[in-house]
Amino acid sequence: DFYAPLLSLPGLCQTNLDNLPRRVPYIFTDPALVWDWKQRMASIEGFRIGIAWQGNPEHKGDRNRSIPLKCFAPLATVPGVTLITLQKNLGSEQIEQLDGLFSLTDFKGVAEESDGWLRTAAIISNLDLVISADTSVIHLSGAMGVPVWTAIPTSPDWRWLLAREDTPWYPTMRLFRRRNGC
Image 1: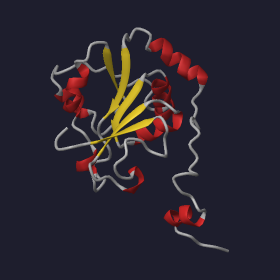
Image 2: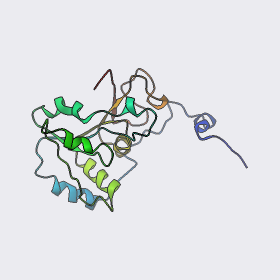
Image 3: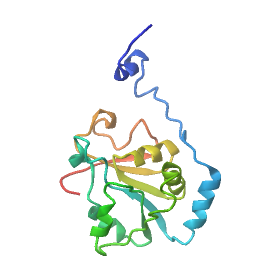
Image 4: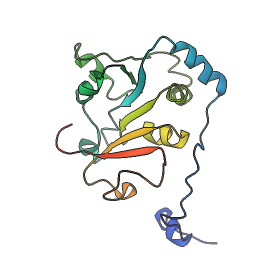
């Protein structure tokens, strides 16, 4: 009976920054899978930070969005920090290009074929922090209520708003507006 473009719905529903739903988590993963990954990750000491750096290179703004993996090198030198890759598929080739620049824990090949997002969510559940470019990983982390730092371009798309370090979409997320380079 009615038709409305998707991006017109917030206006039609009188949604604004004050009445956005902010209750997290609203995505949960299987507790048994979380426990399984807790056991697998038990030997990883220190502050565990999951990272993802590459979005879809076909995205028209990807050159402003994705981050070269080598830009995480300063973070890798912080005492007590262990970096764990959450990157899958495109961008993973950068791991080999590090050539020993820094250490990165990679669970490559562990049940990748059957449960990719469930596995990623279980790993995220066992992290202290997620740091990423604007990828699906940050949206999953934010929806799970996990602390997440997101690197966004200086002039991002509309959903990240302007001049804010937080986002109304995910209360556990902090935004970092990237300058030139890393």
